[in-house]
Each structure stands twice: as structure tokens, then as C-alpha cells.
Length: 247
Image (cartoon, rainbow, N blue to C red; front, side, top):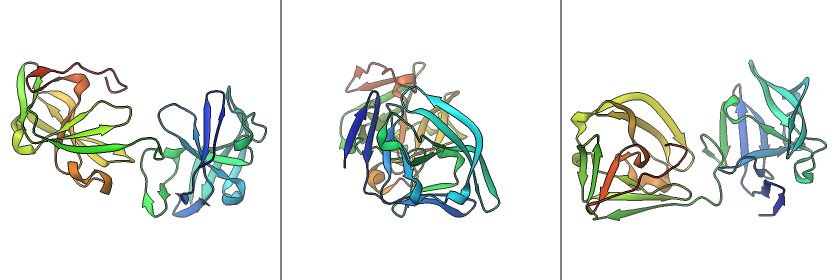
């Protein structure tokens, strides 16, 4: 990968084939995508104009300013019978030379994204994020408002770059009578689709991946709890509640 930095924005080229769809049709298809860190947490894909269906881009006649990327031309994206309003940006005169001649699409406005032939959810995978899942015989106990809701010596601990360790526990070690399934669903590009439970009346404190992505298969069917919002004891020691975007 070739890397560059301009101010607070980082730009890298990836060798992955990247595609995005709208209205059942491919809008952009490239093997020369740029990863651009517009925010610190994860990158965004930028496509060369040559790799975009330009007939799908309709200028809105408006612009949008970014302090780091400059003035953007705003496009509505049309494909088949679908239309995504103001869903694409291009920076023809950007101070970031690497992104000139490229288009970026609003992730959630598009129907689907693929890296090679695997669908990706929520945002592109960050090449600097690693997920390790290790079995552990450490004693893990979870409390909510003084009530023990899980007690296990069979945890799988998931270590993900930039996040606190997550303790995934067998359902047989969880007080399922205190859990109520909710309608909440989230997607992670590293782990897959999660379902959620309220715990002892507190909404969405626990989650699980029924069919995680291949790299996270070791947590399939196990339940994890938000360290930020309840008390977790490991080998009898109360863990400090971490401060994260989930707090």
C-alpha cells in the first residue's frame, strides 16, 4: 500500500477490488480504491472517476466545504429506479492531491458494498485493526445493579484494536431469565451481524453473533456485555469501566 498524509487526513491505496451497488446495479467497481481517514476511527473509500458509472452521477449544483479536503461538488446518485440524494462527493481542486479525480459515496445511501466478493457492512475494514479471540479459564462474573447475570470460567476474550477487551460467555453461564431480546441489530465489518438483549431491565446491554464472519467464528453464539455500562469481575477483581464511544 502507498501511504500519504496531509494535515489530519491520511490516504492509502488498497489492492482490494471494491464495488458498491444501488438499485441492483454496480455504480462503482475498482481495484485502485483509496482509503481516506476522514475521521480517526475508520476509513472511507474513494473511487477513481474512470471506475465510476458517470451516468449515475447527477450534479446538484451545490458544494460542500471540508477544512481538510476543500470544496466538494455534490452529486445525487441514480441507478435503475433508485435515487440517493446528495450521496456522492468529488473534490476536483482539493489540497489533498491524491483524492482529486476521485468520488466518494455515502456508505448508508448505497444498497451494498463488497470487498472482493465478500459483502462489507457499516464501513470499510481498517487494515490496522486486528481482532484476536482467545479462550480463557479466568473467572468472569457480570453484575447489573448488584445482581449477578453471568458467571463463567469458559470465556472467549475478544481483543480488538482500539476497544476494551470483550468477554464472550457461553449462554449456559448466563442468567437468560434476566435477558429480554430486543429488535436492535448492528453490523460490524470484522464480526458480522449482532443481536441484542436488555439485561435486568436495562436496554441493549448484551449482544451476540449467531453467525459471525469467518475471522470471528470463535464467538459464535456466545454473549458479551458492555464493560462501559455494568460491573465485570475477573478473578474476583472489579474491572474499571472503560470510557469509549459506547459509554
